[in-house]
Image (cartoon, rainbow, N blue to C red; front, side, top):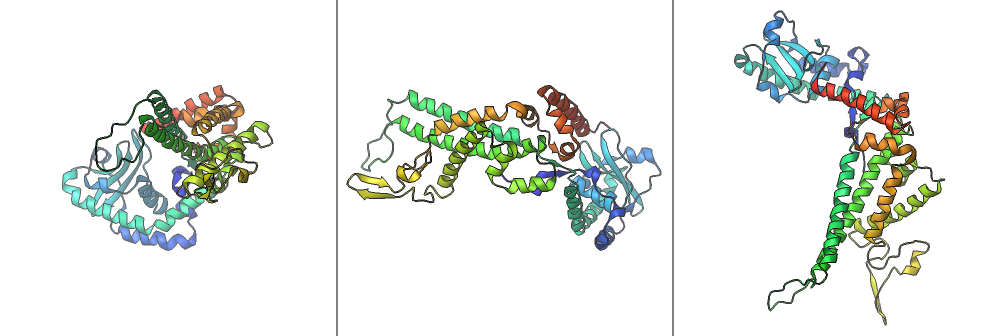
Length: 404
C-alpha cells in the first residue's frame, strides 16, 4: 500500500516563521497581501463585545483552518491572540472600519462578530478575499511542507487497525462461507423448466465454494495491503526508519524491502516466512494483475491424447513449492493458515509492544519521537508502551477538546 505526502500530517507549531522567508517567496507574500485588500490586522478595543460575538454563516465557507492560519499568522504576520477555553487560536482582522475575530474553536473555524446579522455581507467579502489570497500563497504552503519534511517534523498517519479489520472481516467471511458450503453439500439448485439450457453449478455447495474462494483471495490481498502499511510503522517504532526521506523511500519500495526493514533474514524463521509469503504474493498478484491470464502461460492449455493440458506444467515450476496448472498455485485455506501463523509471529518478541500502539489506538507515528529515543524507551516492554499510550492519548484528547 503506497504512501503519499497527503498521508503525512504536518506539525503546524514547528513551521518556520515569516522572518525566515526566502527572498524568492517575497513576491508571493506581497501578492497575498494585495489580494486581501482592506482586510488588515485588527486592533481590539472592546474585548467583551468581540469575544461575546456570534458565529457568522458566511464564515462557514472559509478554507481549511491550517491554510487560514498559515496565511494570516505565519506569512502576513497578523496577531494571534493565542489559545483560550475551547479556542486553538484567535486572529482579529479589520475590514471597512469594523473588527472581526477569525477563530479556530472546538466546533470549527469561523468568523465572529457582535451584531453579526448586520455584518454577514462584509464577512462574505472577507472570506472571498482570504480564499483568493490562499490561492496566491500556494508556493508558500508548498515551501512550508518541504521545510517540515526536511526536518522530519511530521507525523505519519496510522491506518493499521482499519486495514487489519478489513483483513479479519474478509477472512472471517471466507470461513463462514466455507463452513456453509460443507454443511450444504447435498443440496441441489432448483432449476425451472425452460427450453434454454441451464449453465451453472448444480449443487448449492459448488456456488458457495466459489464465493468462499473469492472471499479468500480478497482476504489474502487485504493482508498484503495491511503489511505494506504496518511494516513501515513497525520499522519506525524500532528505530530503523527515522526520517521523512527514509520513509518516503521505504513507502515506494517493494514489499520485500518493507519486510526486511522489520525482520533480519538471517533469522531462520523470518526467512522461512519471507519465502512462503513472497511465493503466495507473487502467485496472487501474477494471477489477478493480469486478468487471470498470468504472465507465463498459466491460462493456456494444449491438446493431447490425455486431453487438455496446462501449458505451465508442474515440472516447469522448478524449486517452487506451489505448482501451477489450475489457475492459481496455492490452496486458499493453506495460505490463510500461514498468514494467521505469521501474524502471531509478527507480534512476538521485541515487536509485541508495537501492536498496542498500532492496533489498540489510532495515534499517528511522530517522527521526532523516533529520532529522540521516545519510541525506543516505550518499546522496551508492553507495560512501558501502555503507559506511553495513556500519556499520549490524554494529550491528544486535550488537544481535540481544546482544553488549553
